[in-house]
Length: 338
Image (spheres, rainbow, N blue to C red):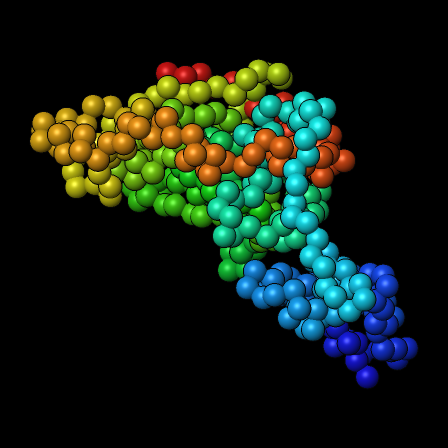
């Protein structure tokens, strides 16, 4: 015989109890919390976005009531009220000001069609468990990093790559970043998943920011701006010092480019030296009214009240995360900006 929910073979298997007066916590074979049970709950999470509560209760009568907040009362399934963020000002004041900048992957994506609060909560628990095993330091776009990954084809069964972070994105377990370096006169870019189990270590060799949010224009810049030695030593930063902003402006190679950079309003690029007709076309694509569009800014961010709820959830682990962050900062030297 096998479990009603997970299909696991159990010698002491008993059928699940169907009760209408209370929530069903787990089946009698005590399989709740098994990895296969969590996988079943994740599958139901995807189905919940396009299935009715009655259909879900028929699919998994035991797990549905506990996972999705449905209560069976007198044969009728009642839906729990939607998520209401906290309005307590004390909780909002306790949230650090740099929480969003230092740990952006803990905040979910702003698009409502991709939101699922149960999945986000499970992902944050997995992210905290991963950080307890492998520390993930503070870094920004423009920081020079070294990443070691497991590689069964390498001689030492691991591979280390050094490069500058030109882009990072996504949230949760899907968070990623891209490193770029020029090796043997050839530009090399590697995209790493931040919480991948193949990652063995992430080091920040030089902690700094740049003038732009993305450095994809380094693909069309001179190689000197993307060349870093593979044996580069970490630079120590003074404890408590703010993260420096490198005001360097790179020079791009002549056209053709990967994108029309004259339309991007870049701050870290020298004069492109294009004819006047290119700049006239660029003005036609400008949208100066977007900086006054409050609704666009609201849709592209997570409300502060919801950020406070997420911080309250991970607050028991926050002191350990901050101690790891400060310990990593003490290993670096403030770089000299030329």
